[in-house]
Length: 106
Image (cartoon, rainbow, N blue to C red; front, top):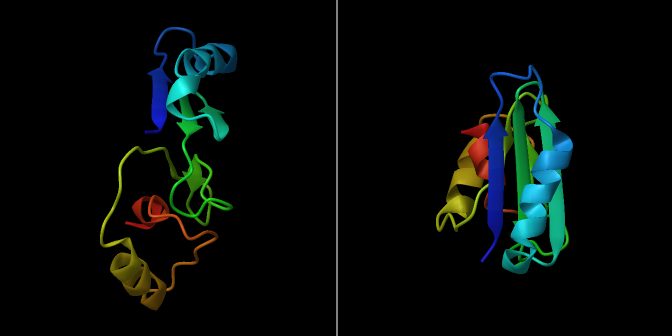
């Protein structure tokens, strides 16, 4: 099972990427296949991935087309194929085959 971490730092003005990485270090056993970090302003997200779906292209965080939305998740979206088809019909572009990617478009 993957592991996710996050921080919102209201006091320092910017989230500390080293702290997010240290948080990931503590849960590396939850997802030994890859690590993803994203820090933007006061928000920091981290992911330790156990690759099951879209092994080659499903690393997280995953971003929307314009980069404004980032997501890390743990779990499975069972109807992601149907959701992807509907979102593509509305003009959304997908860069991977991961179930998590539908979240940034929804």
